[in-house]
Image 1 (cartoon, chains in turn yellow, cyan):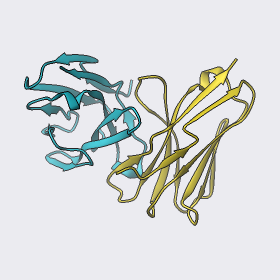
Image 2 (image 1 turned 30 degrees about the vertical axis):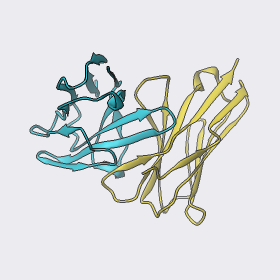
Image 3 (image 1 turned 30 degrees about the horizontal axis):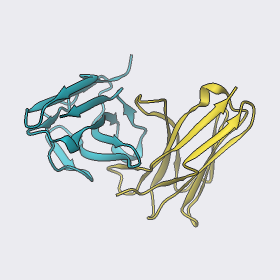
Image 4 (image 1 turned 90 degrees about the vertical axis):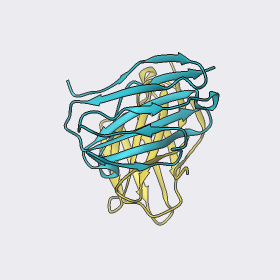
Length: 110
Length: 113
């Protein structure tokens, strides 16, 4: 069963602009994670945010979590062509497994 | 280098011919998992293992088997592959399952004709 749903499904921006992707989920969670996938390759972990945290930063990435709305957002600032990839949110509700959404395809045009 | 290694990278086979996709990690992780990725469906978990000799079904376990005899290896076995198992498969590992970041292999693209 899919727990997280990303929005939008696809996003196209110019280099230097900010990109925002959203994730909604259905049940209470222990943590939420964001991953990046370059075409056909393995996913790469970006950020983990726990249910008692509201915001985390890592370089140009900013993740927020609103447990009352069961939603999270990933902001990539000053985007680069190399940020072109699919981005997935994944939720942990049980401690034993991560459930992934369908992803947002981000295209950053030079 | 810390990594999850899957083999083979590409595999084309015929319906009913048993196959095994290997997965090995060198990070001493306790948790390992298999996912399949299909267009429009995201990643769906097939099986996972919290430790040696401990395995559990994920969301789509039908038609698959796994074993965890050693900590580093977690092979995925398709006893009688069918065309609906054509997919991109990923093995992943982490320290503690859902509470820690997953490290993914580079994937195995399987085609069953």
